[in-house]
Image 1 (tube, one colour):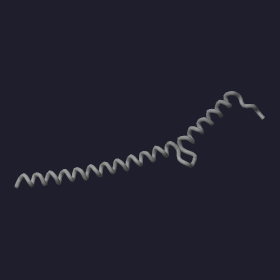
Image 2 (tube, helix red, strand yellow):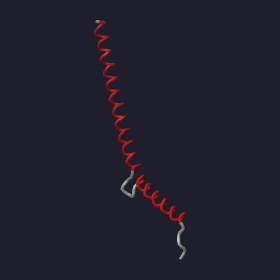
Image 3 (cartoon, helix red, strand yellow):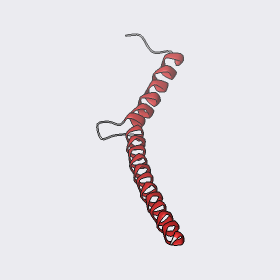
Image 4 (cartoon, helix red, strand yellow):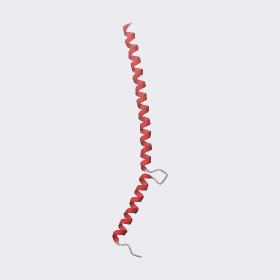
Length: 75
């Protein structure tokens, strides 16, 4: 059996580090940092949709108030 030279040992060491970092990013079946980012993005998008709905409701309310005040001033 042939002995590894220093270069081959360094390559195998670097591959091991790379494998560990990729497992950290993608997860090992339980989710990783990418899955965490996807969940945060989904939560942010839901909150953004709620905020847009709330602002639409508030703008309708202000429009109704404006029409009511305008009608009250005309009489």
